Image (tube, rainbow, N blue to C red; front, side):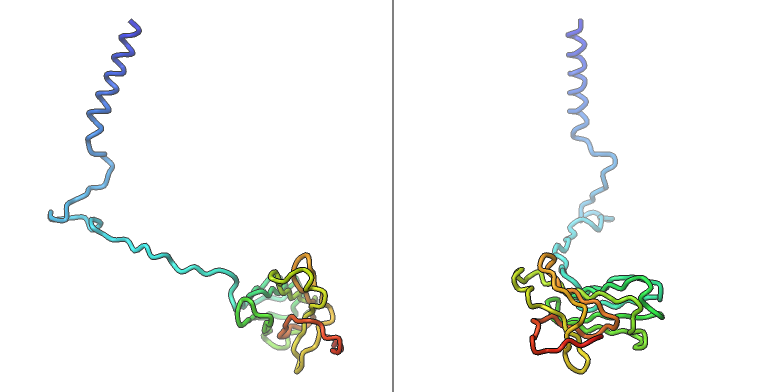
Length: 187
C-alpha cells in the first residue's frame, strides 16, 4: 500500500511539471512582436557595452577650506598634507597642486596669506614607493623661499618609503638629494 502512494505522488508531480512547464510565467513581462501594434520599446534594443573610462591614482589638485578648530588631510599625486586639530588661527583654504601624480614638487597655497603661520606644524609627506630602500640615505625635502632651502624638521623613512617634513608655514616643496654644500635654513 505504501508503494502505491509513492507511485501516485510521483505520477502527479511529473504530470504537474509537464503540464505547467510549457506555460508562460504569469509574472514575466509581455514580449510583443515588432510587427504588432503596441510593440514594446525594448524589443530589438541594443545596449551600449562600451566600458566607462577608468581613472586611478590621486588627483593633481586638492583644495579644502578649514575652520580654525578643524583637522584634515589633503592629497595630490604622491603628496599628502596633514593638518592637525587647532593648527589654524582663522578660516583657511589650502590647495595642493602637482604637475602630475609622479611629480617630485608640490605647490602648497594657503589663503588668506596671513593664515600661513600654523599654531601646530603641518606634516607634508611625499610617498616614494618606487624607490629602493637604499635610496633614502640622502633624501630630504626642500621649500621655496626665493631659493631652495632644506626644511629643518624633515625625515626620510626607508621602511615606510616616504619623506616627511613638519612645517609651521606651508610653501612649494620638492624632494631631492641632500646637498652637503647647502646650509639648512630655519622655517
